[in-house]
Length: 504
Image (cartoon, rainbow, N blue to C red):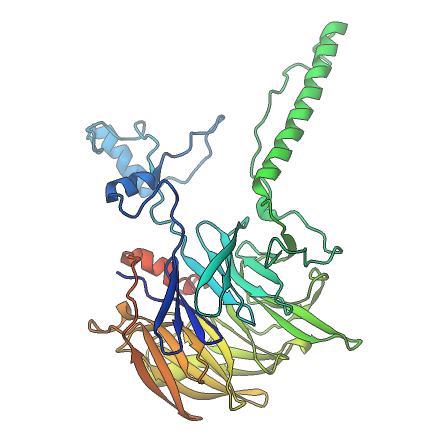
């Protein structure tokens, strides 16, 4: 299967679309401009045979550590292998017995660990594009020439995989959140002067703490078993040597685990962090300030102060009963926040006051239009757009639901505008605003009808409550291919945030 365009980002008159490991650019007429391809290692070439590619993607499992093995739960496969071994039945490819005492370390296949792009955003003036890739935990910064061409400026590997990116209001600092619960700040341009205030202290990351360090030689003797002056002196020297070895090992492990580039740990969540955004505002004394808003799997929407006081928690927007996967500061009404996740509703907040203004039920809207038997939804995209007419539209996409739900902000409420069914086309993956106030929707056609071939759909507005659909077919099909299981892992991960209950 060809990977669809799963991420969209508008930058002026250019639309960037992520497709697997590549970033393609289009103009507003969806004519292809250029393509950035993930750099291939020097030892790899696209023309190598598949066997060589598989061999390069297979590595031997790490050696068994010294000491007693860790206990693990006995599984059904272990029982089958034990029975096969006891019966003397060869169940390996080389004809050898493979039972309870014949297990050998097997090669670990890393072919599925591909560096797919999971975050894509651009600066407000369109001069730079930022992307994050998953398996290599890397943040990429590109210079954009305004015509769709990207020039790579930096690539920085983070301690953990970034799951959400945003920019500070001055567009000079990247905020990177990972599912481990940490939020890091790093300058947009590494070669520029540090943009982080000197008052921000770089705290050690929880994810950078070494899990284990090599244990040096430990003397068995002690001062109660050694009596001669010469042996006591030797024992003292051994203890000093052991302390120095432990210190050196800890320092080396810390150096290896910490990235060499400038980065600062700002804040952390105890739970799995899912989304981050930045909201501008006015402080108590009238100065311009910004706040960092984060969401996690434990139904929390947290409001923290901006840099350099990101450690200070202003409060929480409480009301969600399931995970929160998406946050959206309403454009033009930055005092308002829309959040969504595993609940039936999307929530509208006055975030600075932590006040819930209203809820819009997306489950009922989808049930009334498309799937009457639907019981739950998981919001995978939530974006707000300010139209040239002055209206604000909020678009909601739910995972594996063939529909786009549109709301209009009327004063301090979300008014349902329309729910557009895409059953024939496929499942929507992302949505972005075009300069002419049309909405561009990227579609996974593998979930639609067999003859569905339009990777994009343009929603053209005729009236406040009416949008026309127009498929966009003439675009590059892409080169990245995946099987069904890999496609699911790349495109559909939001529902996995839902906690399993005794009633599921």
